[in-house]
Amino acid sequence: MPEPLRLIQVGAGGMGRAWLRTIATSDDVVLAGLVDLDLEVARSAVTGEVPVARSLDELAVEADAVIDVTVPAAHPTVSIAALLRGLPVLCEKPLAETVRECLPMVAASEVSGKLLMVSQSRRYFRVGTAFGRQLAELGPVGTLTCEFFKAPHFSGFRERMAEPLLVDMAIHQFDLARKLIGAEPVSVYCDSYNPDWSWFDGHAAANALFTFADGTRFSFTGSWCAPGQETSWNGRWRAVTAAGTATWDGDNPPVSEGLGAELPDEPEEIAGSLAEFVEAVRSGGTPQSEVHSNLVSVAMVEAAVRSAALGVPVLIADVVSDAFTQALDTVQQPELLAALKAWEDDLPFPLDPPG
Ligand SMILES: NC(=O)c1ccc[n+]([C@@H]2O[C@H](COP(=O)([O-])OP(=O)(O)OC[C@H]3O[C@@H](n4cnc5c(N)ncnc54)[C@H](O)[C@@H]3O)[C@@H](O)[C@H]2O)c1
Image 1 (cartoon, rainbow, N blue to C red):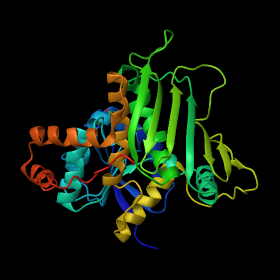
Image 2 (image 1 turned 60 degrees about the horizontal axis):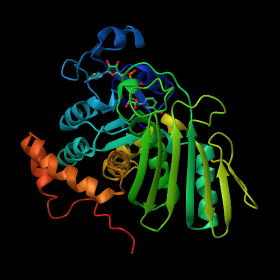
Image 3 (image 1 turned 45 degrees about the horizontal axis):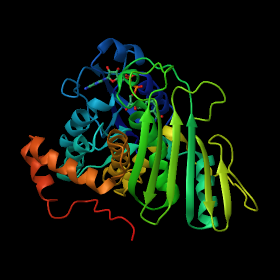
């Protein structure tokens, strides 16, 4: 059995505590230190033996990797600092609030040669894996739908965001759609709005229709202020193929005429992403949500937000290309700028519309 990876966790809020519990029950990792801007929050989240500090700079401990569980707006600063110190990073979703802010994170991973992986925890549900296997048996998906209706009362950053459902939640379903369809998105038409009774400042409801490169249509209909008959946190899914239909309520095994739903024996949710991260750090392999790939999921969100603002369909490639131009104007660190410039003639995500 290899030595456990020594982890520094940055962020000790609500999700940070869930990560601390997951780390504590894993044989693969050990907590070397905890960082939070709020020292009291950090101290109250761990026992007295774990070193705590307000920043990575102030935490003088040896470590092998960092888990970034700060708020989305802090992900670029925290993750880039860790990568440039030579530490691989597992960053909570969303990678950043905009594609422009993600690009220097991709550059920092390239410059440092260290893995930056995003924890997209909804890729690690046994019942979801079984749904994906049913789709693989049925053949190419023509139509994929996801309905998401919840009524959570959060406090903190989500209730102040302009597009809380699209930016903080729908990234899960958009990202999962990529995995289930097995192709990349090309364009989206989206309408987002805030019902009269909403307790969010920004748009808590949205309808988004994506076209994928293989022609598959993925439609997402969701609301974060939908009391009554709520769906699961994964949402309620339907996939239509030439050979039949599969449905999944997000909590229970999927259903499809004539097909079984055998559940794999694998770790779930953030324990699943932690296991894949550890394996990738040890083997040098590429995990499914490595930063270059995950950028496409962030671009799906941004394209949906842009489409909702403009009232017209938006190409994912245009979002990436515009973000690239903005990043060239705003990134200050010379080594990151040089890495971005090296992409100039060959953007990493040249996605063309289907013919
Ligand atoms: N995978 C999931 O299902 C899931 C669920 C909930 C939250 N999340 C994600 O987890 C992340 C954290 O969410 P949360 O609910 O814990 O937020 P939170 O506001 O409860 O906690 C964030 C913590 O980060 C700290 N912080 C902020 N900036 C920092 C910085 N620069 N350096 C050090 N500490 C800093 C804050 O002081 C706070 O304690 C978000 O990206 C969120 O989207 C994921």
